[in-house]
Image (cartoon, one colour):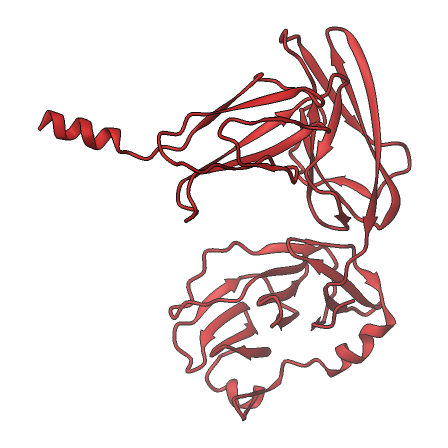
Length: 337
């Protein structure tokens, strides 16, 4: 039995590699040592577009940054391993894995520093004066860490990001500029007694609401007192008999979302009524493109994913979109703008 176990252990397929030096620099050859116990064909991908079929190749990176190195030892793509390698620069710098930047999307910038003697390092991220279009994506993030996540709120031809790196008492100032592009997206329309607004939605983020005359037509057409679902017409007059205090509603995917003493969801047959928000709801709408519910209270506009369970229980906590008060009509615009 001991002999059988030993034979089985020997036949285990393990794909592994190591590299040296441990902290390679740009322009310095990096040796990859194949330590795999199986395989007769070698397929290396170094993460910068270069590949190799040698068993233990040597590769030189031209630029500092983080690269994903992959080794595959079979044709069926079953035996492979991937590791991230950091290439440092003799002169301190910082990099970003992305090369194309769009507004309201998160990007992580990481310092690259060659520090073989483990000197104390201090980082200070900053932005030149009058650059309000660059914001930290995480409110709890620090400007003194080795990395930072940002989003850009305006398209720019040259959005600057700065980093001061102090190593062993010597400070290096790095400033880089990035081209930030606009991108089309869907938007939420809002009406108050003062004006009509449009706020574009970028996944988890949204730009600031702006006064928009083009929103007027869609807001005029929006109403939550009459809905057509599966060829049948539902009116507020009909539903008030079954839903006490109902003030407005929308129907989608066999769910009825309605305003009463707060915001509620129920199955279309009236069963399993669950309250989403206890605050007084002055307007609500459904976004069928992103499958979201939007509703307005005195504190602003809120949103969450549409409810999908039969019992209408939900685990997602409502998120606040903005603090605009007095919203009395909401409408989702599915057209890309």
